[in-house]
Image 1 (cartoon, rainbow, N blue to C red):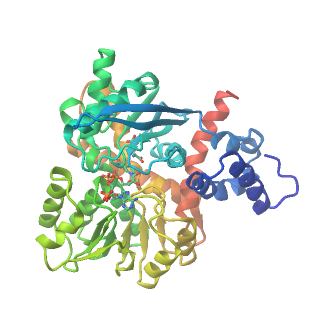
Image 2: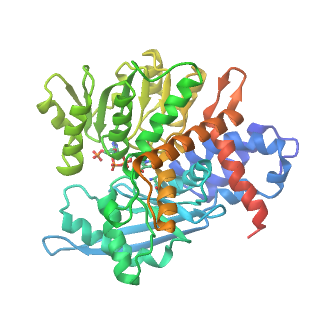
Image 3: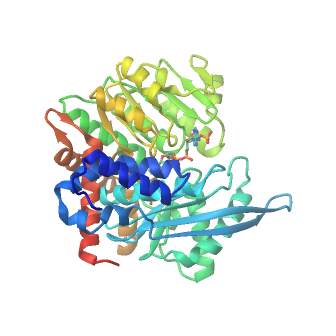
Amino acid sequence: MEFGNLSTDQVLDQFMQGFARRNPGEENFQQAVHELAADIVPFMMQHPKYRKMHLLERLTEPDRIITFRVNWVDDHGCIRTNRGYRVQHNNSIGPYKGGLRFHKDVKLDDLKFLAFEQTFKNSLTGLPMGGAKGGSDFNPKGKSDLEIMRFCQAFMTHLYRYIGPHTDVPAGDIGVGSREVSFLYGQFKRMTNELTPVLTGKDLAVGGSLIRMEATGYGAVYMAANMLEAKGESLAGKTAIVSGSGNVAVYASEKLIEKGAKVLTLSDSAGFIFDKDGIDSEKLEWIKELKFERRGRISEYVDQFPNAEYFEGERPWKIQADLAFPCATQNEIDEADAKQMIANGCQLVAEGANMPSNEAAIRVYQDARIMFAPAKAANAGGVAVSGLEMAQNSMRYHWSREEVDTKLQTIMADIHNRMVEYGTEGDYINYQKGANIAGFIKVADAMLALGVI
Ligand code: NDP
Ligand code: 2IT
């Protein structure tokens, strides 16, 4: 990257033009890279050692992308074909690490942006993990347990060549929970004759970690608590809107309730529910059974709790609340949603999902100077406990719930402190900038140390 006499904006534009040419049509990847580069280009202009070594160019090109055909047989005996992927983005600070997403809309663009984000998120955790992401356009909705198992086995039959406890350690993401991870693990064991811990998020019965299931949602709430505390405030008595009703949303809600906040909404891809009385722990237990046992839809909540309302085809951002936890998927908050949230008095957004706010929405948060924890920091608790699962597996030992939870809280507090260190701008903490720079430095220093490889 040559800067000459160009301004920061010109350098950024020039870089992004080249990047878009190399990754045509990949809008999510371009968005994620632009969000990071907007903070890293000015930083590099002040730090020539990174600039000279072309680190931004190198860090925006995945190390390797693997795609493969997955054939499996459904319950009716029909042969089905899906596409599988693994994007190994960067392994400078540790083995490739990141989840697998099974969702009908999965495209390479999504996995490239997610693997890129994962590299900086994993760096922020302080644990030795590189960045990767994978998945398939397989649609798990409505599939039987046996179909899920057969798909996972077929997927691993190809993937097993590329992963290993020191090479690449996948985990779950949308559509992949401990059931799927454990089926994948079973097939890895069958193929290699080894019970090597090559995945995290495993069922507790086969070496999973306590608190892994809860970690992403809990971590996002711990992050929000740290941010509020920095302003002399707390979660108690605050209202919160949460999107999604999967792993992240449910456990973010659980921790919010425990901390005395009132959770007003949850959603899925068909709509959202609004419970003005608040979703309490008893109602949340019912939701866990609905989502994780019966695999039902969030609309069923209003049949069970008739005081609540269901808004079909809508997202929860118009509901007035102090706090927002987007925990469903990418680009679920746009500029108009963000403006509505600010007008309603929202003070804090903590991203449980990956890239849930688009760039225009983030500008609205920053212009309004509200607290905004970007995904790579706010949802790092999940992969952090994955790192702790790897550590426990290596020790052939396990920690108690309390031990893992305490370590998770420490990691989230450390991430908060590092964002404050690099993101403080007068009396405003630009957490986005703090996360981008702190996440970048650790990976960049490792790449400098390893040489041009
Ligand atoms: P789950 O599969 O458990 O739940 C996903 C939830 O999001 C469901 O309620 C789903 O609704 C909803 N959703 C998915 N796609 C869409 C869409 N296109 N539009 C609207 N709603 C949608 O996944 P997780 O809870 O694990 O993941 C949620 C987010 O958190 C993702 O962005 C993921 O990358 C991120 N994340 C997950 C981590 C983890 O450890 N699991 C770690 C860090 C981040 P429906 O059932 O209708 O599809
Ligand atoms: O986005 C994420 O951080 C995850 N889906 C978790 C990855 C992991 O390896 O635990």
